[in-house]
Image (cartoon, rainbow, N blue to C red; front, top):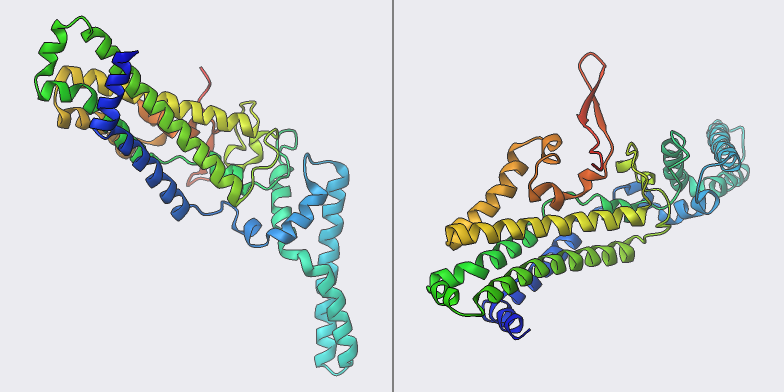
Length: 337
């Protein structure tokens, strides 16, 4: 325990590893707050009207909800036609101003929630394609939380630094020769590995909790027990997960990716014994596939990158229309095995 405490103090305090972890967390949080945009802009811009519709639609689609949507759609169409007719009659001199204003006021009452209804009706078109695992709910929070599929460079740099500093600092000052001759040398190496891997997991968990808090405050995360296919990004997925389970799975995959990256870097640092070369190996193992390979191949590589991205393991197949009108598979769903 004393060796572990000493190694933690040396790496986290003496070599500023703790400051690096906190800086990575802050940078990731600031970047998220600065760049995040709602997935469904109409749902957010007309949220009050959409919530009015959602009060009648929340949950699984049924005949009653479908009938309400059809009735409301027909009512809006009829009111628009009546308003246009009243306007034409008013400008033609066939209707008085009082009658026109009365007709416009009545139309305004019916059309007050039109924008929100349009967003709800678009969601209905999506839900009706597969009502068994697609439910009505506010999706912006879950869509933002689950669709984060970009490499977090702040986390990558923090793991690179910690893994490179753990052993390369000993080689830089030739302390490795002394450690190999001491009874606690092996325990010291084990403690370094434990600290680096534990720090990588702690950083990913903290980042996941930060993202969870951010989206819960900004949009809300209702109905975590609903199927995660309720979010359009995962509509074609055949995996049986709830929204909350999908978040936990994605967070666990990112933690595994961080552990895998840290282990790879620790192994490389013992072999090459240089800060720069260790960091270069880690960067190459993540950035080269990210830049140079199609997404389809990335999620089949035995490397940390696909696990750090995580979301692709949960997605279903994606298709694009070819020149001849045929469907071309852009991304094939990755099976759990």
